[in-house]
Image 1 (tube, rainbow, N blue to C red):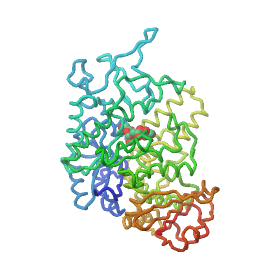
Image 2: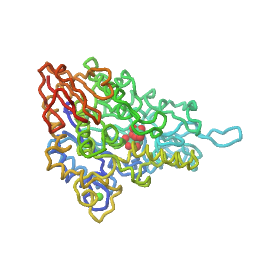
Image 3: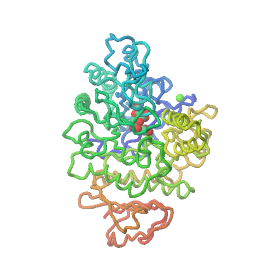
Image 4: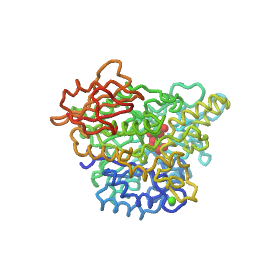
Length: 574
Ligand code: ISL
Ligand code: CA
């Protein structure tokens, strides 16, 4: 199983590299950077959706599974990319988005055309309810993940369709066998036959819903639409569907990593990833990336609403899958295309020193965890969130825009509420991950042609933070990531497969230091991380007892067993 000790590099096609100067990244751009990608020491790439799409949700709204979004390139460009990757020994994963399609997909067009359409039942249609005044109401009070009702009224046939995400993302009806078979053929086998190595499976726990579609209790009186995710995640038939899907994947020996929002208990997670279940090979749990987000609404929260002890607890929760008693497999990641940058969330941007130190320390943390490691484009050079000075118009994501509009409406445009919303977006929005990749100090960070207008503005810091500059600097964040990945590869029993344990030392250190062990075969790692801007007592002498070998450090300094510098991190082999 190649993926167990692997590191997978995630690419967001729109923002990685533009090869033809139209301001939008493309497949040609990815192809042209395979040397760079390989130089990181990764084993595989995962491409976010590159399928044809009207881009209401950046390609997670697919209008044709068997075509490529023309600005990105063609099916043949992907075929060439697959061969080029394989020729270098890199594997390639695509994104599988089959909870919903775009409303422009031919299946939905046909489904919505009439009540008697052959594909009517391929989506989830329900009649209206009518209240006491005879006013038309949605079938229930569920809120979509992007805000507003999860149902949209369709004039043509006078019914509502369900969409857990944007209005333009109608949910497929997995209850229908014919629909499932069409999904397997079009979204999966079409690409598996071309030799891809697997899929990242979007919202892998939402295909089965409670088909009685009950109302949920009102938790937010400001609106009619209520949080209902617990009713559409982990539904009654989800395990049956995933097992069926795994049967298709098995024919091609393809791997899967499923996205698993809102599955919290380890027993439930194991239901998806335990090897004997034969469903998904691994999943992305949300424990860590959800920390510090609003409980009911993700952006209804102050910046940095988290504590280090909570972070430790959540890391531990994802690592429990690897403790030897379960037959599951885990993933380690701090970023993806839906998350703000990890340095801005968990590290420090106060000055260049602390930025670099904390970017490396976070790299050390995540790359020392067990499971398959995922690195998101730009993470390897310590890219940070868009600056606080940028106006809200720079935020293009459907979720950001909907949230800001929601606050505007419910607060009647109150400037204080809007300022808080903007602050929250600056801290947590999905947009931050979608800024152009910073290649060099030329205009637009070298992402596109100098005279082009990139689809999102390049970060102001690109003259300082970019690949070209860091590649020449042995002490850069990029150089550190390369070293880190090489060392991880050298000791897979402790890094990718070790058994994690928090080391609790002094009570009052709890919110300052994160110390953990990874037990492997007759040896262990000791990872020591200072999450503060000041020096801390390390007390390493007692912990190491003269036995540890320093594998990695994120400072250029000599090692002191007594003191840890701000955001210093070390990995010892004991
Ligand atoms: O991004 C989130 C919160 O801001 C998540 O709740 C996210 O909506 C959820 O993880 C599902 O994400 C996936 O499916 C979405 C798409 O917008 C995301 O980009 C994708 O990763 C709908 O297809
Ligand atoms: Ca382009």
